[in-house]
Image (cartoon, rainbow, N blue to C red; front, top):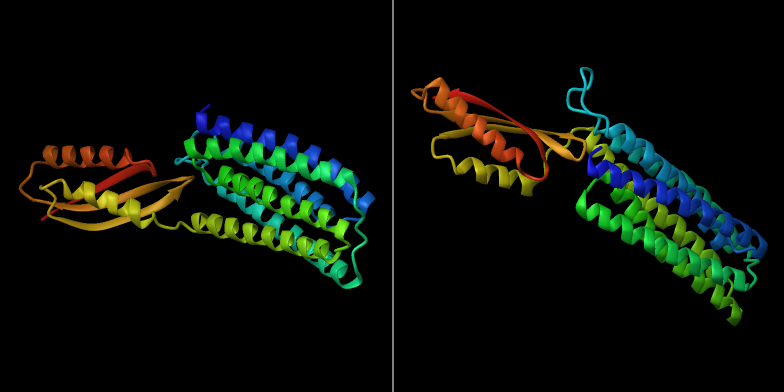
Amino acid sequence: MDEKFTITKKAGIYGMIGNIFLLIIKAIVGFMSHSQAMIADSFNSAGDIFASLMTFIGNKIASAPHDDDHNLGHGKAEYIFSMFISISMIFVASKLLYDSVVTLIIGSKLQFSWFLIIVCMATIIIKLYLFLYTKHAYSKHPNILLEANMKDHKNDCIVTSFTLLSVLLTLANIYWFDGIVGIGISLWICYTGVTIFIESYNVLMDISVDDKTKDLILDIVHTYKEIKEIEDIVSTPVGDKYLVFLTICLDGNMSTFESHELADNLENTVSGLDKIYKTIVHVNPI
């Protein structure tokens, strides 16, 4: 199996294990202490388990090689399952936002507890480790499933830090901050979900390669003095890479062998770029 899929698989498994543990301790301590922020955090961990599961399944499908029915492989499975992750985030965030607003209106029943402090510290440590691990994996093999998990782990470190602050503020008889944190967590989850949804949607709707990569392709084409004109450049996503179609114009007096040799060299050079899966060059004589 490709190293990219192996490391993404590990990230999904580690995420599920860590989040299951956090869900259990957050839920128990959250309901015992009546902390809306901690309860919100436990729901967030439930969403994280689903996200890690979708990462595992989506990665497994995407790692399957191309076949007769899927000539360009199964790479878009990453974006289909990342869209599932984003929808679950938005759904959970909506419920948490409602509960937190109600808590803010009627008042918080949060009680200080050292168990809350311990759970917050444990969450920050575990999530920081998962973030650093996923960030390292993403730096080596960028893909949207790892990106979604990386952002989620980072967000959790931040929101749990605010949860810890809301618990400490109860020592000064400040209880309203608990509801505010619950609202902040829900909005943060929603924002992350919408961001991932848009990115996944764009790929599934065949968004073109980014301008920076397009400029790199054009720079390569311009190194061939034999190319008189670039008629067209079209791209479509294939997983986290792009299939590129180039239409170029060459001297009509060139032999078929020479024009095909140039096209082959151009295809190989462009396909060597990080974001390019495959390049197809069509030659028109002028």
